[in-house]
Image (cartoon, rainbow, N blue to C red; front, side, top):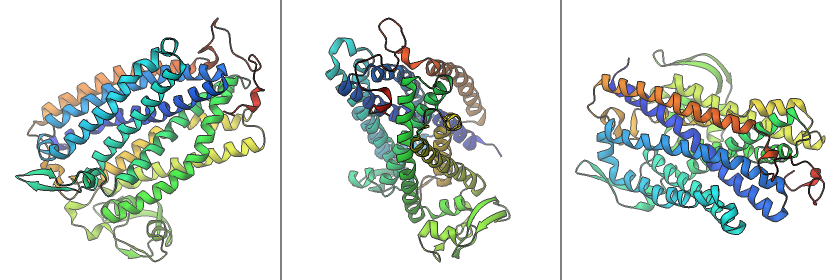
Length: 460
């Protein structure tokens, strides 16, 4: 049943879902631009410069939309979530301020040089600016993940006069889940970017398999997917073990386990029924759930029924958002393996089914990130600060009508602004990357520069 609290949660979920898409892309894209410029400076191969300029325009658009969508969320803390902001301001306020001072200012300070300074400041200083922007995006991830992780596993504080007061910034920043979340998110950002780059490269290869710029971007992207996707699976497993230790109710909901048991099965598919307290139509693999979660065939998994009804997250939602994330992660690993097989068969640039597979997987990183974020945040419920402050205590006394009106306005404005911005990004991606840097507008082709043959470049 909808009420003011649910609508406020939906509004924040809507705005942050839009926002998280852009930083998750620009974190990886900034590092990719750093690599492209480094390759150009090392080899003086104009194709790398062409690719750098091709993706630089897309980075600028995504960065701008990320900034705009992020500003909106800060206002919601003071409007829809006043009691939460008052209680946690002594902890989250400085963390978010550090993000602005050490990350956003670093990015913004060097972004102008990165975008417009190549022909004005020289290649070395420009490369330094590119490095600073890439470092700034990682700093931003550091502080934002620290703040979010503190809400999941709060540490280093006491409650004085109804407010959280920091007793140890080291404990607050490096709270028990921070390291796992930071690694998991940064790897997800790199995978998201590599899948987009790979999809764009695949699209151009399907049109012209001799497009050297497309070959380079596709090859670099597939190397990243092949290397990072297996690492992400390991990082996700470690993150899961940490979650099992600190938020066992979330894990029980994700896995669809209502009864505590040793040697719990892995439920592949089913329908968790919160009212009946059972997962219906379950397709199970005996004992594999305990092995995955505890690394022990007979490990104990606590079920949802061991928690008070008011402390249980919604298993029906979490069960499926978690499986969407994991399923996409498996597909990423399969794409990486397929690309390695294509290299071995020397068909990386001619295998049509591989290019179509990569093209379909292009948006999958964003879907996986959203599914993972839904799993993380819905799994924290009914707490806004886990074990400390309930979501029902965090909302401002605003009428349901006012929240519904502002939510409708957000939907309309976002659909127009970000719809146009995203369409422009797609148009930029559709342009031939060989035209991005060419003095007379001609297509740069393999063999048009005095370096080694195009099939033996460092990027391939």
